[in-house]
Length: 224
Ligand SMILES: CC(C)(COP(=O)(O)OP(=O)(O)OC[C@H]1O[C@@H](n2cnc3c(N)ncnc32)[C@H](O)[C@@H]1OP(=O)(O)O)[C@@H](O)C(=O)NCCC(=O)NCCS
Image 1 (cartoon, rainbow, N blue to C red):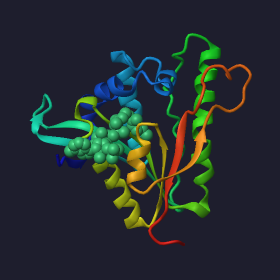
Image 2: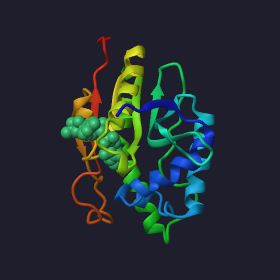
Image 3: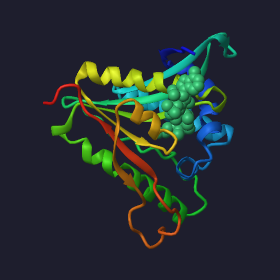
Image 4: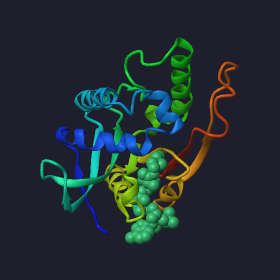
């Protein structure tokens, strides 16, 4: 199936945040960083956070894969999956927005500290790449296709969109891949750089076995 890939506008958030969290909200990483993600209030908080990020950071590009034969409640084409890409360029400032929920949503300080520790562990390889000499970089920050629409090419089209953007800018691409995403990224030219686990902290070492993500990168079109 060939989906149409379109830019996300603010009116789309109410349609795609609930299925996004339905699809990914129970994963350890998301559930720890967004503990209220299954509630209406938590989803509203996410919408506000992502919209503010869009206003503050022109390098953020949200895109959607749509099935034009079906419709959302307002008649716009049915969203079947989304991606958030971020462009990092040498002459533009980009303040890192932590991907954990704003506010104090955790039951106690230890749980909040663990969420921050998980984020700090997750983000290390990205931070190492985003140095001036490596820019421009295009980072695939979020990718999800709703379960009932998977394996019909939407994920590939959302990745291909960012790869083309990167090639136009002669940027390298990076992604913090899930095990599910890894084969797709390999198909689209990404290589595994690092298996990323929790940083050492005696309070949290028994929280998670194995990796948080697989850090992958795709070379720029022309070496510089
Ligand atoms: C990873 C993810 C985005 C892939 O989305 P998708 O829409 O299923 O991706 P595609 O359909 O493009 O490709 C997936 C597979 O389906 C196959 N496929 C594509 N079109 C197909 C078709 N018409 N019929 C059958 N299979 C098809 C692809 O060849 C690919 O298989 P392969 O990996 O063996 O080559 C999706 O599984 C997902 O949302 N997972 C949960 C969230 C997640 O892990 N996101 C990545 C975080 S970094």
